[in-house]
Image 1: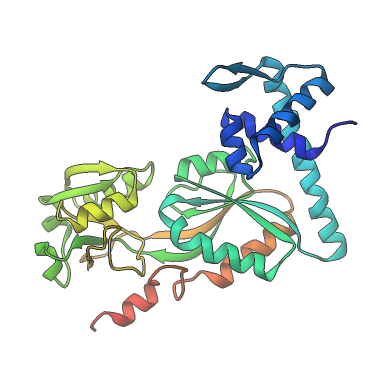
Image 2: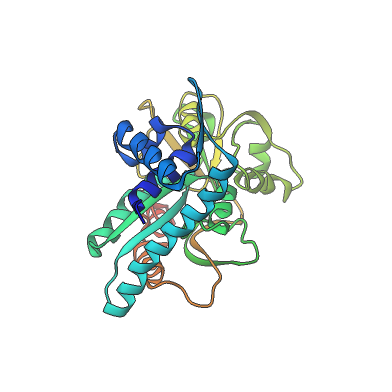
Length: 316
């Protein structure tokens, strides 16, 4: 065999991004190194892997699509060697492909990932951030080992380890009339302009809070970006519904935001760890789940005001 796993990894990154430039950015490797690796692979395999499009990147040839599947399988088998070795030697090592719900990632991922790799220096975490549906699809296709998201959809074939529960609340700018209230009802919210977080599953959850009471919200605008919504709210465009409670009380532009509780009982979302059901989990995954369970709870969530802390702050 006259090709290397590194060259295979360069091929996979280029195929997934459709661009040597983007593959270079993802891997933090120079573009000439990736180009050379792909050329070497094509010569060694005597097969053209890509069609080069002038100014439009690359696309896989039919042969390239077939070999991409085999390349990913080869890398997975190589990674599995670390898992087997760690189990034999009772050491925790190897790479974990971790996905995280986009609304959680900026708060949870940095501290959680760093604390894990600090505790287990022979491990590495490759992070992916996306919406719930996309993450579960990647987990199903074995592109991810584990996902941190909400319990809003748990399809058959997945395991879910609950970590912390987040009830919904209203978020407004400091000059909004709702900001002066100690709490607010769904009926009062229905007629006011709502800035809706328009992500799959999350969108249905928030709309369901109104539907449960036979109400329809007045949707002023929608966005898939939580930070954009937060800043719009801070600037007086309307209110939004949220579950996450960032420790920061300001939007991206520095304007203050105010959380207002919703009266009554409403279904919370539960942060947890998704994995595929299997006969036996890899030890690296088991250790990571244990780490999550000890690190995230109703009493402490990285980057957030945890539910128990919120209740302690609230007047009785």
